Amino acid sequence: MTATAPPAAGAARAAVPPGWLVGPDPTLVRPQRRGLVHWLLRLATAGAFIGHGAYGAVMAKAGWYPFLAQLGFDRAAADAHALLLWAGGFELLLGVLALVWPARALLLFMFVWKLASEFVWYPVVGLPAWEFVERWANYTAPLALLLVRGWPRWGRDWLR
Image 1 (cartoon, rainbow, N blue to C red):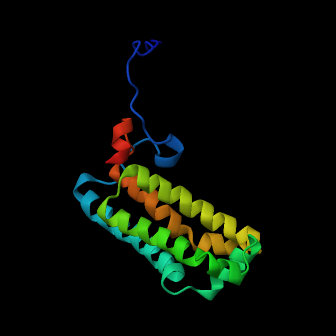
Image 2: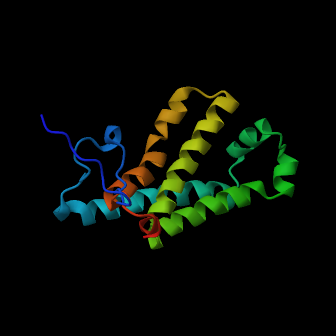
């Protein structure tokens, strides 16, 4: 039995996604399909964020008011502070950025933002857990796009 030598002092370790997430092979998509899958996931990510953002910023969807009421904002306060416009505009901006600059850091942030925002709303308002499951694609699309683009090996790669 041979022992492997520890890495040399100062040797940089390449960052890889956790094994439980990608399995033994971090190459998730064959190279000849990567461009197509990349654009499909980019469009799916942008569509989810632009669509949800439009509900708040453009349509001022009345269904958002009960969520805000649970956080202490009645309809008058939400309107006075333009909360639907700000929240919706933020998601619209994220969706547009996913189209024009899908940096890995942005995609990770989008995944965390969407996961947190979807997860927080439903237990707070008392909707069934199936509401969270039904929106699964909204937060997994940015994660999948991040993994297809490749987990960053170096810190500067997060901005590419």
